[in-house]
Length: 64
Image (cartoon, rainbow, N blue to C red; front, side, top):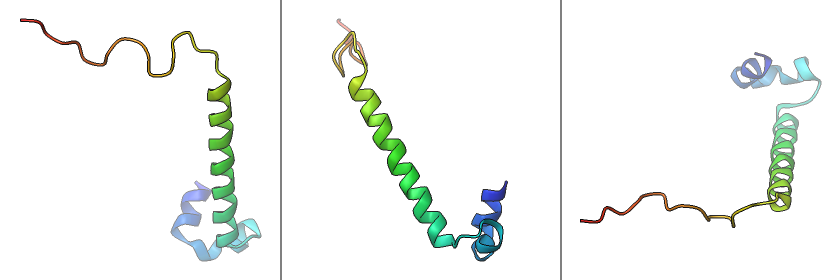
């Protein structure tokens, strides 16, 4: 709810959060990048039964 308000009125960000809108965007970008790094690290350490991309084909061929 607050995030939607800030997106609608970015000039009020300093009054609400005590940081500027640019600082908020920078903080959000850093958080997103960190989240993506953590997800990549977790997926690389994941124990897989089948190799990545393995398994049955997406579409089966119809034999006539």
